[in-house]
Length: 182
Image (cartoon, rainbow, N blue to C red; front, top):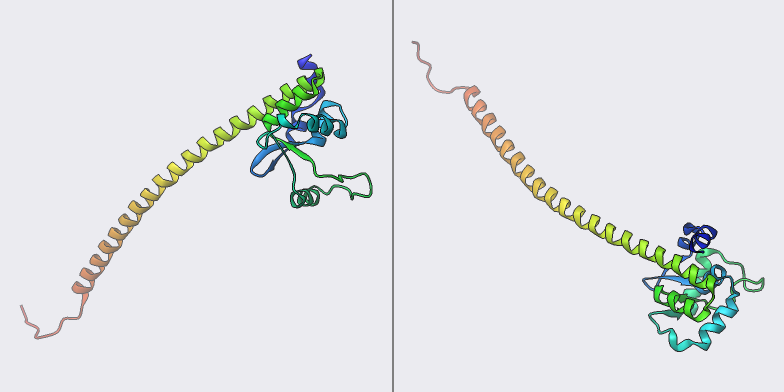
């Protein structure tokens, strides 16, 4: 059954439904309703009936400003023509887990498992990227040290060249004074 659901919903489709809102990775109610095979109003009704299961770190409703910005960003249809008329609920990974238990259908459970796997992959990617960034900073620091050393070497070379040039100028200068015959 798991493989059937996994092939039914491509991972890319789920990944495209994960948004960054309030510095959190979230999924919106309409996307989850589509994935779970229920209407958005049914999903919202189930959440409101069990609102105590959804603290702010599990779910939040987009503010009016966030909602308008989100609509502009994704070009949703206007509200007169069956577009989004109400601020959606945004569910964190914990909220998605709780939602699966509230909906309590076989499809919700299978889709939830797939979503959790994707959230885990995202977390792994973030950790990997963090390690890469730390290594890049370390290399950058080493380069800075090497840059300082190169600058010092170039400064010594410049001083040596100046000394050599001064010595040449000293040897090639026009002599003044009396000339003596040998």
